[in-house]
Length: 412
Image (cartoon, rainbow, N blue to C red):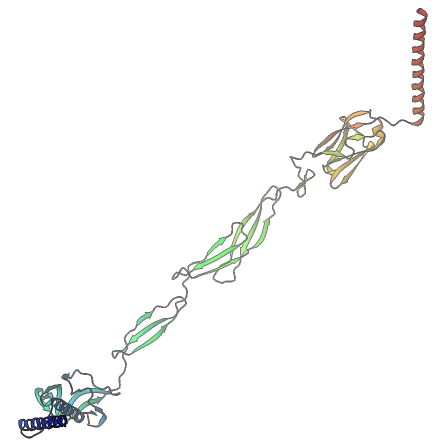
């Protein structure tokens, strides 16, 4: 119970103190409710916004006809700024800006500043060349006066090459008007400016090449290679050079036909069997050889065949042991270009048994070798007589031995 009385007493004391504080605040402000700083800022901002809302801009022509209404967003009344006659104006196609007016005054400069009352708009105006300042409330209408632009006729300069043409690529020339407008014009490709062609023959004259180079760009070339037509004016022989005329004709008309004379090398000899196949000349280095198929052996009474690698047409004579043999004792034939001589067996019979020499004499040289002749073969009668002779010699030998033995025994 005692604690409840104490709590009630405290609550009554707190209420009394709050009532006194409210009364004292009311007396201090003269019985009126005072505005807080925050409320003052809101009111000031509202004034600026109201002034900005009243400021309008109209674009008109020189006759006063409206071209466009425009909010004065370029004139920010919430901050200090200065706009002079150089400030850019709205661009209206077909018209040129002249001046800014407010009422009958031409505005040279427009400034915005702020004081305790809000935005202050000051205009520098000009009348009859005299400038003065004028305060604006913000409710006035600014007039941007435009004059209809005269139709512009471009006047281009002589132009400047902006892209150089090349032999194969077009160039560009650019012309500029005083208004800044430009136009371009193609410059035709220059085309090649060729040097005189040069002509080069291959070392063996099998080809001729024509070449020309552009004077403007050495990397630009034209070339053509052809095989020349040949006309023999002098035939070559084994020992003498010939001559021919060469003509190189090109399909490119820029290249002229080229002609020249050239030597044909001497053919040289093509020897076989001591003679040239082409000119029939004799090979000075030819040394004919003689061969047979019997290893240099001739049988008594049998034909003996020898071969010379000299040509048959060059055969002159046959020699045995250095003596010329009558043509009736042999025959001559040609086999694979060689000279083949067959000595008759009857001629061989006339030769002694033993070694002999045989030679084939040709116009291109002499081929020689040795050969042997064997003894004639024995017949049957000759064989029996031989055996009889041998038996007789044997008997005689035995008798002589016996006689000698008897003489020796008698003496003893």
